Length: 550
Length: 82
Image (tube, rainbow over all chains, first blue to last red; front, top):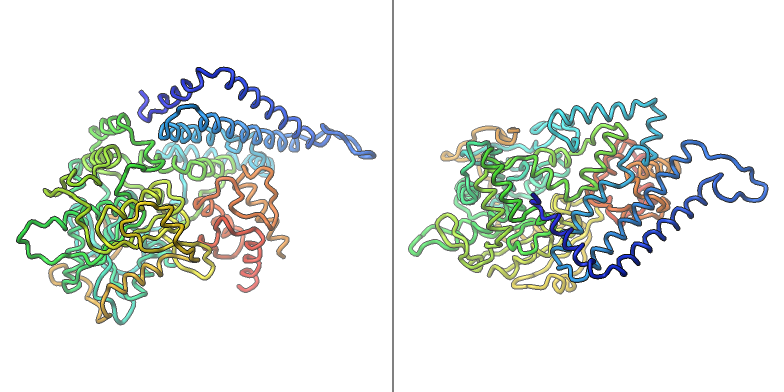
């Protein structure tokens, strides 16, 4: 039972050092020496333990002082062990690249968990709070921990889930649901300008977590940003799957989700082809759809429904999927499939756990220290609130996605996949592409997102933004912004580093660059379309019903 | 006033990021000097600042390159003008 191949990687490290006992013993001696040196150095810093200056009175350290010192010493020891173990793995003779990275990833998880800051007696701030509040801080923390545990959050809540209400404080941009099927609702937002571009923007959102990451509080709303610049915006809000949706496939998301949304948006906007934009897995679905649409059987006279397409933090080549790939192994997929066979869905708990482990320092341990050891309420952050609003995945779709994309990387093989009855060949896509990657992305590493550039025949504008998977994309321009980005043509490019070395660093957000790219492809503004149409009448006010489903 | 703000920010950093250890928390310190500083760490810092001071801090300001001195100056200016 080793679904994530942790023990096999550990065994490989052990094998690597088995034939070099002397070298290993030398390293161990070096570790002991470093720990001893650090201890002696810290001893000198503890008043009363170290030497006193002439004329200075000697005094015994008090309890808090000694505790602060012990915490500091523990942190130094932890840091020394951390870098010793890291060096041992990195320098393991003969350990192959991916296996080495796997070992580094899992030991990082262990070492993050063992950080002295996560334990009461070695976290001085926690002890100080305890003393200052007569123990109330820890009592509060333990009460929250018990509550969270009983409500199914063993890692403790990341956000104050009562601080925001969907449709009241976040996801508040006015609009209406103009189409609904059993998989998604399509929201059309009201215009904010007297004239709008005839070509609408259709967001194919990821179905992991909710759509409103693009409509958080007003200053951070991507929808408002576009609407205020004269774009008509449509947004897919996916249904949170229940066990009855166990047989829903990736094809369904592509055709009954993305394609249906594009067709409805186009119909409402007087038949205009749309700007389609997909984020993360929504972008992967959009890419397969673009290949599918470019494979129309001969003799089909339908106009092409997409003018251009945009991908935000999207993988299409899964050969180097980054840290998330460590969770997806042959064995872990089989294990998840057995779990999904019982439930019909991939539980949101597993998805949340995987994402939190990717940034365990921030998303697990800092949260744990704040809530349990300091007894503080979880933070009131719109971003963290959204992050906690997890969704499930239908069993058939999740199994297909993990196997065909992550394990077999079949999306990049010509005609290797058949979706919606057609072979998928990315090389047939010719419509202009705007692709965005983010520098610190653990979920879709930017160098991997860059790999789309030579897989399609489209003209490509690639943008690299500073920040991570969420904050690099939800990136509203502002006067105080210190963010940066690099943007340039990238058609057919294979070398991301070489491409980057040719680009100029720009300050601020890439949103203005994208809005400019879209408007150049949008024809002249005219009267805004009505909300819905006779065929697709408004059904309900935004943000609709599906987003409320727990 | 800026000294008081700096002291509050310093104590917040020690509490939020105990692993900061012996890194000197001076006005010249960059946020990127905080071990494992990333966008989620920035969210934690943002929430802390908005709870302690009557101000709005946008996330796009709290990048690795920002120094504590610049942050304190921003807070001081904001508090004075609002």
